[in-house]
Length: 559
Ligand code: FBP
Image (tube, rainbow, N blue to C red; front, side):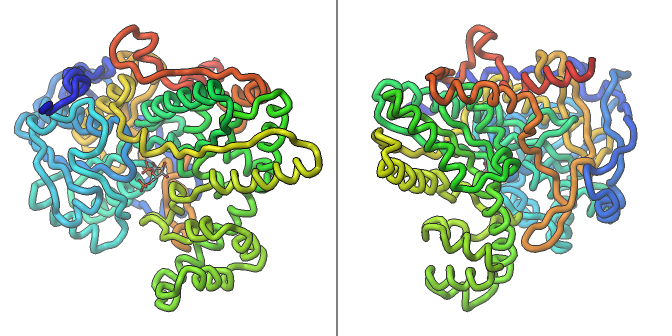
């Protein structure tokens, strides 16, 4: 029996690249401070909530004289949904920590943020780390979505850190998990606990980004994985010429994944949630848009095609957005209501309908029971609707069939419509990290330790200039509060890291707009194939179109 696949064996040997700046060694760097910062919005409220960590400067480094480092134990947490490269963040953190002082220890808290509260951990040794280098998944220590916010949780975390003499914590996560990191950093600072907290930008959704964070890790590998699968389906559709494929793609809110994959594969239809919201498109207008393309293609004898549907679409359709915001408040009220909790499903629907405002109740009532049930499921611990469980693609197909039947009756459509639906999400979250993600993640983890070594807290590890080769990447740190604003969660306004949505005035969306009509009717499909780890740099080291186009636009803007 084999213990490892041939690819696993080869990937374990891969040596990730670091920015040349960090190759000088952890103990040979000096800190460079930038100007003081402000939160992206709601400055007064955020400043009040984070009196100890607000307004700090962005930091970077310059090389200096080698200085012997004090001993420092660090705890690491993987948080939220899996993203390719998490293991390399831990490997980079481990290598930097041991390089700084071989007596340093790295502890991994198990099962996400709950590990630090419950005191569940393992010491991460080189024997363990070496088994996980350049592999996908978060299974080295597991992950979870526990929200850190109560005094009791923070106290327990402090007790558990004291037991292990931990003075630094690294939280690897998305916007919600880095919000956890900011809250924990502030709490420790307020208690003068001497424990620092650093975040790392993870999420396949690609929505944790700003001027300082060019991309979250995992986006590169996940989109390449989905693009491979979609390329294969495009070829299948083009060969059999009998199905319309509707593919829902992950990305809880923003449509970065859908947009990137569209540019990599050029399918017939790509829905962009941000555009739907901006143009105030109703669900029936979305169906009309799709039906129009189905009809035109049928007139050309093409009863097949591919449509990409973003996972978060439903929350961006204005009538649904309004209804869901109202529904979230209702759900927060019925969470501990015994009558509701014990009621059968249909009765729950009527309880909800009765509590919604009149026009929202109408929208809710118009939905098929399946979607009603999916929308009424528990929110995640951060108060988000679990959009991965809402079958928007099925809702669209059902409405489209009705529309096409009506068009047929009116003599406006004479084609055949046969559908297949897919949901690509989990397939891409644990793939072997691409060379880009392997290098980026290793650098983020290595850099997280450098930030800890300089005594910083409430920062996120940042590695910039990513469209260049790794030797030209620039490492530093960004205050977490700089990325925050106030948003309603579980019925209350809370400080959270702002999500970056697709910019409709941005260069990536522009490419879609320029080509959309052509891609709808002519078949300009691209077949990206699988991620390549070995071979020519032109296929192994290519980054995403999103990163390439955004970096290009930044350069032009700077001139
Ligand atoms: P993160 O924001 O934690 O990175 O997770 C993103 C995501 O992959 C979304 O794309 C998806 O909606 C969600 O996780 C699914 O969550 P779960 O893994 O809990 O089913």
